[in-house]
Image (cartoon, rainbow, N blue to C red; front, top):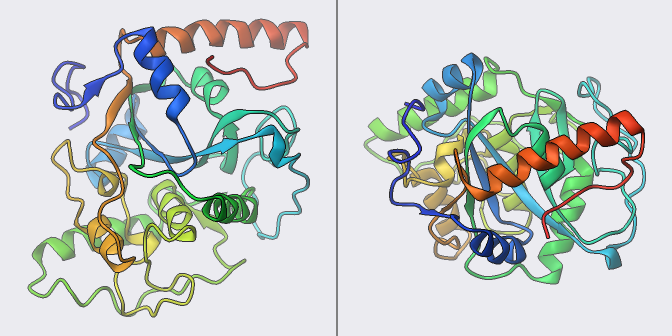
Length: 304
């Protein structure tokens, strides 16, 4: 599973192996791109027994100063995440600036983070982070739809490891693999109703985010009948990419249902042991620690 060395793991993926390559990739990151994570520790290893080689997934948002500030939020869920959306913790509430952000669901709940700040603080937790870039940029309309979705779900709780939805996703993948008729979808599921999804796990959140801009057509989401295709809660991190041997059929089904071919390019390995991005993040982590000591950190740091 996730114990492979850097050279062995996802060996076909292009490594971002120089500062120039990192700069080129970073400048191309945009809303709708995907990050896949392989993490250290007993919990991620246990998670990968259900989720495949990847144990976490997040979606990139490209924020521009012209987008204006984010205000609020007023959480609607009954059980909020561990941390509320607030200045100094996440960028769910933020002044306008040009920034690459990530939308993710973790044990702290659903939040929007400045990407580099976030990954610097967790640099020793992740062994590999891969990028899946869109072949075509999102439209301004899609950019607005993704932002509206992110603001709607920020502050919600995290779906726990042994939750019903994660178990559903693991068994959905297994039942699909052995199904004789894979075109019937998963009848008897749960319809997405705004305000009723109190908690979301990472791949469910990512699938819904991409569903909000029409990349995926999801059962029970945006008016799609429950018996047509797959639900967002059927997704696992491995379903977003099969270059490590996992199955991506649920993804391909939902892309096809949306009326397009797979819109993502082959993955690139952004962070790996000894790589330039890991080196950058470790340096940034030291800066963030010093900022905390000095009480001077007010804005998200980022690679440039």
